[in-house]
Length: 160
Image (cartoon, rainbow, N blue to C red; front, side, top):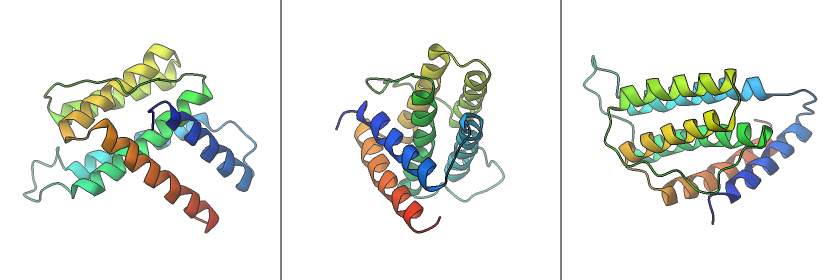
């Protein structure tokens, strides 16, 4: 599966949610806040900032699922503004995860305030850096996205 196909998958899921939930207003801001929340949840599962704790990060599959929760909202925000990426932006650079999360948060906020294609692409670059430092490949992300996408449909069908 091509990375660019994820945009269409997300568009279909969002359409399904909006129809079943009878959404009649623009939910861009809600999706933007959801992205920030998911980014925080991802950071929490990595525990990278918890200098006071000896407990390690969550299991890899838990962290990956949190990662793709963000991807759902990133895709959604992009197609809402007619922004689309054809391929995953590869960034292979060792970096401090705490700093990555702070920068990613700033990048999301910048995009929400200034909705340009360049700012949108910057979010993906920051997430690529996080993915690399978590040891996730594009294939890992696409596969996890597909699984979570189906889970999200199931949740909607079951009154989530």
